[in-house]
Amino acid sequence: MTEAVAADETRLGPSSGEMLLFALAAMPVERAPRSGWFQPERLATARVISRTEDVSDVLLRLPQSWNIVEGARCIGLHDDEDIITADPRFHRGFDPRNFAIVGQGGGERFALLMLINAAEAALLPERLFARNQAFERCVFAA
Image (cartoon, helix red, strand yellow):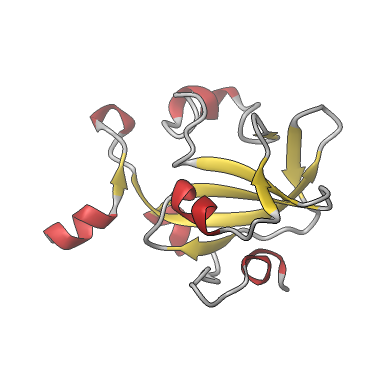
């Protein structure tokens, strides 16, 4: 790996098994019955929306109508004991570089943003959130 590539990748420490977290995925989610919890929308597909930014970088570029849902958790991630204890993106508490759920304006649309590793990224379709691209189109368009 070249130094230029290494500088762009986010790595979690040696105890994490050196996950190469360099891609950012987004997926439509909806409110779950439990307060503060979300779940994937029916038939939702995650997409890689960035190969060079972490969650906090993308949060800075979101339109003003999108806001972080503080303390939001996702069914299937935050309630899975194996994930909470073994995955470094989750067992260290909330880290805005790794995960966030954002909501649009009046709460009619929500999206999960998560930093993913190279193997996960290879399995997902890509719709990059470029400077001239609408966030909604990257996440919600069919």
